Length: 319
Image (cartoon, rainbow, N blue to C red):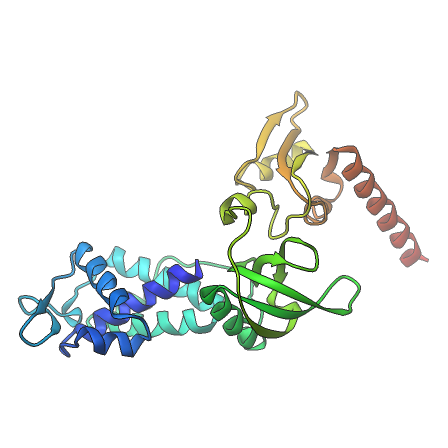
């Protein structure tokens, strides 16, 4: 996602650079710190997207045809609303992506009526994000390493509350539930691992290139997670929800590969293949007495132990 997002940002800036300035291919390459071949590919992508860009062999410059200009774009109300929602989402995420979106948006809506913006009828509510300033250094260092396929050494705090040094081949950054994560091959664990950026205090480039292992597929990997983490081999997890909770469970899709079956008493069974227990236990516990884990047996035991410990803690507080 990050690599695609960065290219989208560059394409937007190329459109802005061409608007009235007539830059050459080398000018654009130097401006965006990419090769002239990459600029050529970007321009072709924009032309295929129906932007009327033309190239002059005489001057070696790009320009728009027939007086076209981004400043003359007139947005429909629906298009403006779509942009407003995109801006709201990016602003929630924070960082360079939000700043780029703000800049692009301010340029694009110069000709829009202020009233059409202030009367926005649709909004998006997202989980409050981690303070991006606290992780910006880690984000920038890891993003550079992802793009360069460069191994890094990180200092990460785990469940023991102690920092460990790990060598990591970072594959991708992703944002989920208010937090930024990096996923990649951890040499300490000899496996794919996910790390929250706010739990990393230092990132050191190692000047060693890497290749993606095991034909890694991000979407396939994430399909084995309940939220962000995957550990071990996937196995089927089955949960039962009371008739009262069943109504809310059926209102949305909680996992891309979930399966729901209904019981005669109005309760439901929710099943999904997951690798790792911690995240799903926390989620089921959040439903209180209206949910329980049916299987597998090992997960059910851990869940029941946690319920008993919560009950004991509640009794201690009552004294």
